[in-house]
Length: 79
Image (cartoon, rainbow, N blue to C red):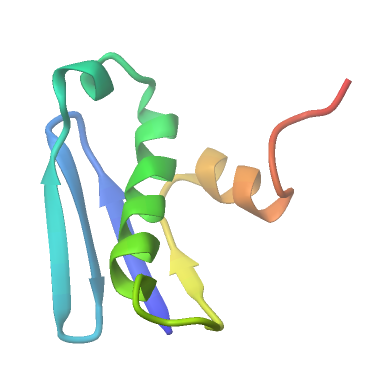
């Protein structure tokens, strides 16, 4: 499954094949950093597309290098 997601200061969007989804950020979400919003967009897309399934192989495509690195490293820096 290939999912492409993106975020802006207004909202988020994602697609997987012929399926598209997206939405606007809440007032609370608008105060978050754009890198965090990119991660939220990816999370929302994955949850929306896999809610009825058990096991998937997912390729998540994002255009934010910081968000991609965070995912590839399985989280932030450790102390």
